[in-house]
Length: 464
Image 1 (cartoon, rainbow, N blue to C red):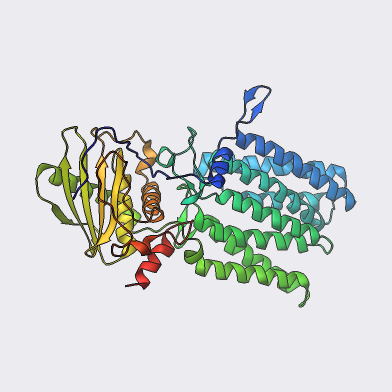
Image 2: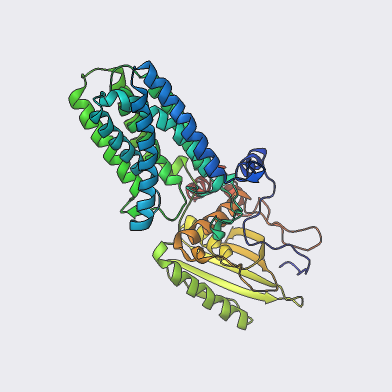
């Protein structure tokens, strides 16, 4: 029995949370902190950046004085670092028109400061050990600035931040994203404090910080959702830089350092951690499952459009093979007198993760809608969706066409379906079919992880 139509239903174009946790409300406050300066609203990223630079200069001055390094050298190192950081970002925008790669700027700053130390006759590693700690302080504030402004954001998750500012990609506005910027800020704070404790023998703090940061950054890249990052083969540009830094620093360190040191043991622990995390991240960092390759997104949009057109013009369910082998979709469209339509999908696939992701793709491609049923029965995912009477799609900017944005939106909807337990949701004034926990597979779709859907899907597979 299908639900009766109502004209006063609430429809959505993004996944809607049944209830917001206190933690998520706190995250949402961070995304719009309302910082003011002299009575005028100030960009949060700029505020955090200026604060970070100020604190970093203070830390560098303090550490340099303790090491008897000239204040002239400290001042020049500070000016050169700021200049190189800004110049590197500007040249990348003008010449390469690419994103700001933090790890590249970090290497440029270290290289220019090493040259400065050589010119003034200061021991290079002595200065770089102090500089890397001050840079760590700056980067903590920088990542907090990223969190508030929305850059370098994470992938869809049940715990995270919602953004609604004008500079954020319209395709992801209102979708909760994992706060990977905050995780990285905490990691940088921890390794910077550890590097401070290692001050003593020249080069120990620098080598430890570089390897520890690269190890963490390599893992964090798996949770990043911003689409401007360049991908080369299996890894992003930043991850390749991390591999280069870890290999280079370890090679130099093992050649020059003694064979048995506490610092070397710590470096080996960090390397072991990164290897283990990279091999197992899909189990503990279950944030996104992609069932559709990026290159096939346009073909899928054409397929879904043709399927909906055919189903809307007839009275019988229409079943078609999708562009991806092994996936078929059946659709029946029922119209109401009020103009709303009920889309009844059946998604056939041998892979559970693919079927769930396709359901998410279908939802993200719809105009305003409301899910009234999602369940697994007869070897297919059953999805019933009320679609608003007007068929106008939200006015997304051009970035909605980016395949990665489409995948992120589909992942967010699929994640929403799993977290809500594959149960029917409706309002008290309309008659809907109640999908109970006794139905086949329903009990296995309850969320096993607050961060995503991989673990729920894995559990379903194990029960087959």
